Image 1 (tube, rainbow, N blue to C red):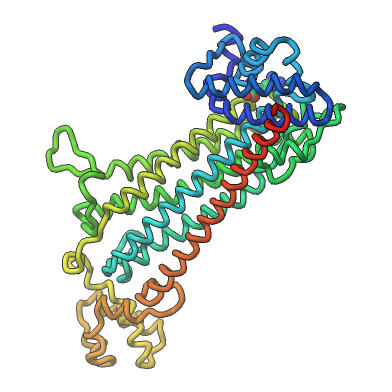
Image 2: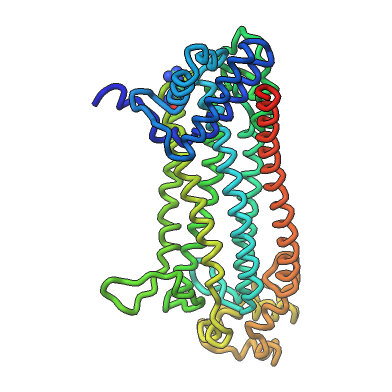
Length: 457
Ligand code: ARG
């Protein structure tokens, strides 16, 4: 094992290629505008950067493993094509600010993609809720507790995913800030314009302190914390789908295109997508722990440890994007069984709390009502309850339990309908947030192209 082989980061940072070209282009446009490098030199640099990108996109770019990373490979390409004078491209910059600028560009793309996929999943879940009008057993301690609405259960997860969206939207504010111009860590004596490059690269502002700019990786930790929280909810949803799909629970059916078989047991319809989603949670928590441990105790500014920061970010981002996409599709193939089949699954006692409530209506304090119902269930003798509440007790069933719930957020028909309408509007608004952010970065790309045309004609 040679030192070059051991220290290279090409395998992972190749993914920064396009961001790196944009970054270096913006930097050189600025250097030319400020008169720090000759306009003609900047023109050559930018032309060769553009060629490098075309070669890369056509899978023709030849990477050299002798060079440490994507940044050195691109610089080498530009200098070898444009001559020594193109070595000016790295004026007033260091790989330390270069790499973290690229990483922030990728981090914002990953965040946006996850935000969009969270909305697609939420959208599918709303559809699922709308077509799931049945009453199902609701659980505490995995024991039947109260009758509830399937749609209310689905909406609970939707709300959690919309909060995940909001968390990512919030961390985006701290991700989309530009460290370029920090150079090695102390800034530079060249009169660069940091605000202008930040604008060309679609950032909303600067990471102002140059030391903070190259040393800070809290944006990655924050995104990964958001993703770990999201994974926790995804794994709980997966677990419930696996349970509900079992013979014992028998609450849902999943179209066979989303299940997998067994090599020996012909009857199997396994929910591997949910099992893998649950399983990958460990990996995504691992990615969070990875970055936290990586950052623990490394002195400011740059240390080579930081080269490892991209693995957890890309891994968690890629895994979650595929999980969210497949769950959004799969949820279209899930349906609750019909009410008649589900009715067979209710325990007799599932209406116990509503019985106690009926006694409360008859004027008995709740704790006494609770004890009366508890005794009746234990003895299997309901005569005392019947004496107090008469035939109202015998009328209690899962349907009117659900009917009677009208307070905000409860598992009753009216509230579920209201929440569905409300969440639909929220999702629409959230799509606009993603769209605005995309437009902003697209706009910055267009602005950079315009500046290239101004320079190169
Ligand atoms: N390959 C490095 C990374 O990904 C680039 C920065 C190197 N900086 C340095 N001072 N050696 O982090």
